[in-house]
Each structure stands twice: as C-alpha cells, then as structure tokens.
Image 1: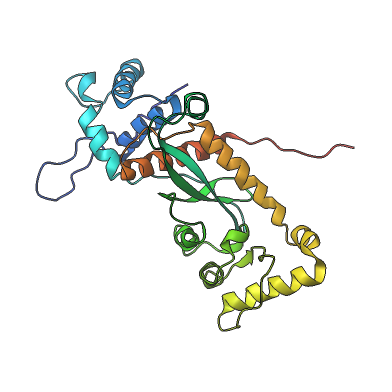
Image 2: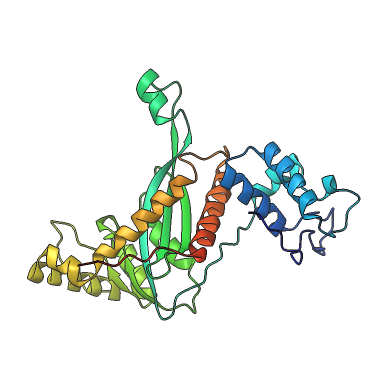
Length: 290
C-alpha cells in the first residue's frame, strides 16, 4: 500500500537565488527514489509508476495534468547526485548506544553465480557501507559510503559526527578493527564509553589522552577477566544486531544500480531511510522460553 500525504510539499519553494527555480522539492525526489529502491526499478519505470500513482491518488495539487506532477528522467538523475536524504528515526530514551559495522556491496560487475559459472567478464567494483545503529530501536543513525580501499577505522569519527551534538552517547560498540588511537579519541571526545576489543598482541598506550586511558582500561580488564568473560561483562555481543541490519541492507539488493559515486551514496542513504521506516512499523520481540 502506497499513500501520498496531501499536505506534503511536492512543489519546491522559491530559493531566492538567481536562475531557474527547482520545480520539485527534495521530498518529492526522495519519494521517487524510495519507490526505485523498494521495487528495484530503473528511473524511467519509476517515472511511469509515480504518474500512475498520482492519478490514482487524485490529489488536488497544482498542475495542468498529472504528467507535469512527476519529475522526468533528467530531473531525477540530476537531483539524485546532490540530494540531501532525510533519514527519519524515532530515537530511544536515555543515552544512545551505538553499534558500528561495515560491509561491502557490489557496484559494478556480474553476479556471484555468473562469475562462478562463466568467470568474470569485466572487473568488479565494490563500495563499503559503514553504518551505526541504535542498539535499543535498531534504527540506522549514521551511514557512510566509501570505496573498498578505505578501512573501517577512519570512518568512525565521521559516523559520530552525524549524531547531533545534543544527543548523549552512552557506548560505542565495534570490532577489533576500530582499536586505533583516532577511534578511541573520537569516542572519548563525545563523552562515550568504547566497547572495542583489543588485538591479541595489544600493548598499553601512553596515557596522553582520555581515549588512550580508556583503551588501557579495556586492555587491563581483558587480561584480568579473559576475553570471553570481558565480552559478556561489557555486553559486546550486542554487536550482532548491527550485523543483522547489514543483511537487511542487502535484502534491498546485492548491488547498486547507480554508476556514479555520489548517486550511489544517495541510493544507499535512501535504503537506510526505507529500513528505518520498516523498523518504525514494528520489530519482533524475542524471549527465551523454558
């Protein structure tokens, strides 16, 4: 079921800048791209779908006919490049407990079955998706898209920057790839507690920053309690929730339809907005029995 809010601003408001004004608002463009992501449609098919839906909705929006109420192919393609995607979230009560993870998603190349059966016909390209989710509501609160040459740790400060400054962060949970000075300092600067396991051969750092001191405390606790007990004590196993969310991201498509990087970023951000909408409708509650 698809429902259009009659009160939404489908037409763009005047920007006050010289030159031609945009016809459609960012909300209208994001709506079209949402349908594209949900049904895995090319842009031209999305245009026809939106026009049909607007006819069925019979909304009293200004325009000579329904064909002028939907963006054309050039408008959608151009606006997708620089669109500011609104990712809705409800938020949780109390401090935010952020779970961090990353995964690769195919940008170009044949599918896995075709590659195994016939071999690669052209070089495959991948993008890395880094997300941070709320451990309580399971909503995506931060997302970054990079090339596959960028590691996990350098993106953590950027993910934390996407959380509003007035939002208190309680803990940041990530795997051992984020056990770096920059990551621990970024977490400490937000007043949060890092739940990041140290490496097997980890050595104490010079306690010159709050992040280094917090990391040394993790190292001492791990050596004293043992790695398995520390993970249970610190509730590190909650990180499996973000791995499950990564699977949900790929359920909307194993690959990316866009070919230009900025449009790929927009497409993946729209996926995050779609998943948060699904999560807001309700999530299963699992309880042990017996």
